[in-house]
Image (cartoon, rainbow, N blue to C red; front, side, top):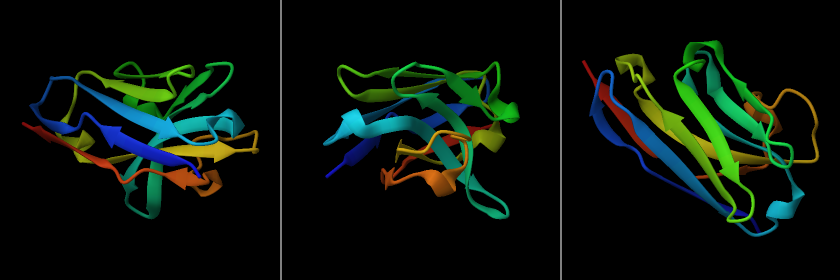
Length: 125
């Protein structure tokens, strides 16, 4: 059984930074990708960033490129999201997720098998 537990959310002013963490337990050796997601209009969740669990290749949605950095420690089984230059429109609940088996578009939330409960990020102007 896989469990994902996020932490690191909070309230910051615009231009500030936060670092999200997601601790994974269970059969993490099966992971193909891990990612960070947030709610979006017209979608259940928008892919913010994802990372290939073994190779470390990273992917970002356009709105966060140059501001957010995803990384992972696949020895400690921890996923990170460093969020810099935060904007009020980044205010959301952020969820980490893990995907098993599929190789392809890792920003598509429909592919993911396991989800955390989320951590709230609030950015004030």
